Amino acid sequence: MGMSDAQISTIKRLMEYEAARTEPPVDFPNLPDIPAGRYIDQRFFELEKEHLWRKSWLFAAHIDEIPDPGCYMLWENAGQPIIIVHGDDDQVYAYYNTCRHRGAPVVTDSKGKKARLTCKYHGWTYTHQGELVSVRDPEDFRDLDFSCRGLIPVRCERFGNLIFVNFDEHCISLREYLGPIADEWEEFQFDKIRLSARHSFVLDCNWKIAMEANTEVYHVKSIHPSTVAPALDDRRNVNTFYNHGHGRMIAPRPKGGNMQSAIELPDLPEIETVGELGRTCTQSYGIFPNWVSPLSHRAVPPLLFWPLSIDKTLFEVWTMAPDWGDGEGPDYWTENNGEQLNQVLREDTEFGVWIQKSMESYGFRGVPLSYQEARIYHWNQQADRIIGIDNIPEELRVAQVIGEDWMYPNDPRVAYA
Image (cartoon, rainbow, N blue to C red):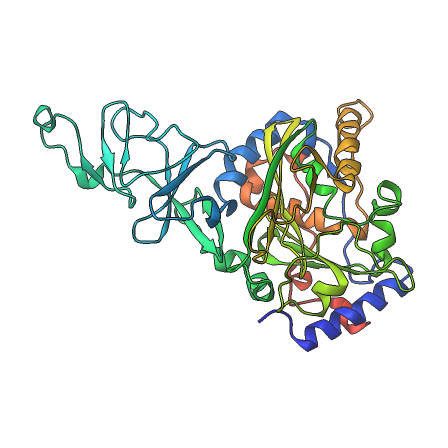
């Protein structure tokens, strides 16, 4: 499906509107300062832990990591021990890695392949569908009801070859969560892209500091003067807000400027169905709470930001690409197969350490965001709604000022473009 010709035409008009404006759109709200404590106050960090990571769809794995029935992997990025299993019925399941007998881990290897999941502590055995099928010495139990002793499931759904989990058993479906973005993503063939590279790095800053560097272009001329800036027209960037806290930016390459991408990939197969914007612009999506990814005809390379503590982040960099045949596929974000981040990401992440220090000073009072940084404010509004506004100390809340009139498909700018 992807974007229609009418959508593409509207975005092009909005690009010219953005380039010509001399102030924020007349109908766009003033954005109050984001409280400093949302980055450095342990109380807010604990609220994120209790609510954000328990009530959001989280990208966890690619089907290539558990390619065959019986394959499983452990996943703990959100602070909970999870088993993700490729079932013998070819469905993908997720469970807490917690035996229903004495709470031991059901599996301890990071990856493997088993016809049954058997706890090595006392031998309780489960199917790929989580059902308890046998226990050692059953004669020593009275009235043990196998039907209510299965592994505790975690909501698990796929978008193409990508596997997402959600700890909230009453959550909406992944498709509903993504909303219209799911339709826009069809042109990128998520059901065909292979996993090419996945690497992790630890950053010495709050996870939102790291993530926010990838959700606005206001910093590009300062931080990326010779890498991203020549390949991205920040004055023609068009931001879009979606329900559930998601956002999108589309920025063309500069007119008459450097037509080379800031990140070069080897000459490998392309995603043929990708449309004009994905081929000629930086088209990037933020999926609440922690996914940021440019998408193009060359690759789907999401960045994932996971909190290790209030001032440390597990930073995952992924590359997924159309089938390249044998040998190594592309690696969008690192050098020497994960030895270090590429120059663009080093420019962002190395400065994040300095930002963390500065934010911890007495001089950090709050964050006044520009119109170009409004996707950050939109994210924070959603965070408060998920946490529950009444659960947040008043001095740590953000005001809900970006309303439904700015949520896609609504866009007051179209009237002026």
